[in-house]
Amino acid sequence: MYYIGIDLGTSAVKLLLVDDNGTILNEVSREYPMSFPHPGWSEQRPEDWWNAVELELLHLLQGFDHAKVRGIGAGGQMHGLVVLDKDDHVIRPAILWNDGRTQKETDYLNEVIGKKNLSHYTGNIAFAGFTAPKLLWMKNNEPDLFAKINKIMLPKDYINYCLTGNFTTDYSDASGTLLLDVAHKCWSREMLKICSLRMEQMPALYESYAPIGTIKKEIAEKYELPENVIVCAGAGDNAAAAVGCGAVSGNMCNISLGTSGTVFITSDEMKVDSQNALHSFAHANGKYHLMGCILSGASCNSWWMDQILRSKDYQGVQAEIKDEKLGHNSVYFLPYLMGERSPHNDSLARSCFIGMEMDTAQSDMTQAMMEGVAFAIRDCVEVARSQGIQVTASTICGGGAKSPLWRKIMTNVLNINLMIPQTEQGPGYGAVMMASVACGTYRDEQEAANKMVRIKETEYPEPELVKAYEARYQIWHELYPALKPMFKKMGELQ
Image 1 (cartoon, rainbow, N blue to C red):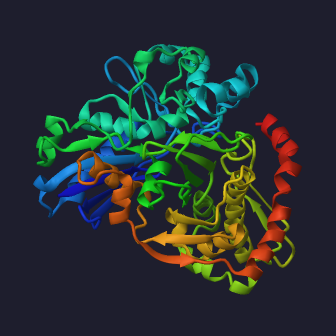
Image 2 (cartoon, helix red, strand yellow; image 1 turned 90 degrees about the vertical axis):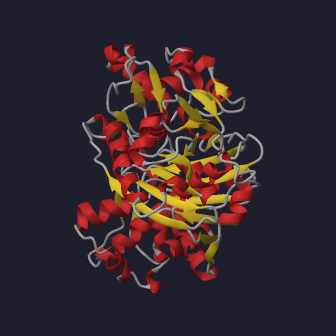
């Protein structure tokens, strides 16, 4: 039997066709545009997501027996606000996870409603990228459109709605809305009231591996698929990636270097970070996790290469960085291109290079960019360590993880072993594993992981390089607090 995994990313959708043993038979992808109507804003058309999925389904299944497809799962970018009217038309472009327009609403939630109350209602405080502040922004700035809202969805749930006609979400993705009581796994009535929402506007809640229905008859006919193909609830991209890398149960860690960068730590129990710098979310396995998220991960590299260097030779540019220079760069980089979430919760934070001299070369700045992302990931790891959580090893996935140089920098900055899975398609592969559980092929996601996830190599820290990076991290760590007042003044001029 075959399973289809959908990874609905920020820049593109990726589809996988996988068999019962976890072998990837085919993979396809299609990009779609992103718009930035104002500085700090980030939007996409949900219709573009579905169009991309439909177009690539044809390519994915070409040459394979369509009748053998048994299940579909999706992992998708989190927090994005998708709103439909009573006729199921999309009301406005989706406001994405990295959109920074909601600082006023975020401040209202944290300062007027209060962080203590928010944490009690949901297990988390407000961050600008979360869904609840976006809804308040719509209420304050687009009241006519807000009044038309009939259904509120997250990005991957829109794809599932198009596939099945069922209005659902899963607990892992819903955790990032700031509308879910994560500990009790239900919509928070207090938060719905604060955001002027009704319970009937919210999707039904499921575990990620639970079946939510079968594909529509017209979808089955169009793609010559069986009508009983099961669609599971799916998960937010980070939970799906963790499952796809084998970070399912216990206190396991997965680091993702995708458009954003995340540190994902599994837990059998609900844990709330006392500083509220990390998110306390449900995991795709029915349990929980702590997560730190930096808004600009591998996207810093894309920005540097595409916008600044105007080069597609990623490997060639990185090849100029010699091993002897690692840990000894005089240039530092703050990776706050879209503001920052964890641990600073500051949409006004901005990126910068500092420490340049007359002999600073392009390679020094490239290296600083990669190190800055690693240092920002370490900021999140240090919050977890301050809570008594031991992080000594992690799997790693995402586009940035394909770079041996970036992996080497990361393992020595964090001083942990980094394990690279054989399959690098984290969210899409995790979605396949969830679908296989929904179809009854495996008892649970841990059994699926035991069967399907394999580690191809491990990166180990080098004591001397760890020491050198420790000294540099301590300097880097002081840059944001020193520059924070300036970021605020700069924001006031925009």
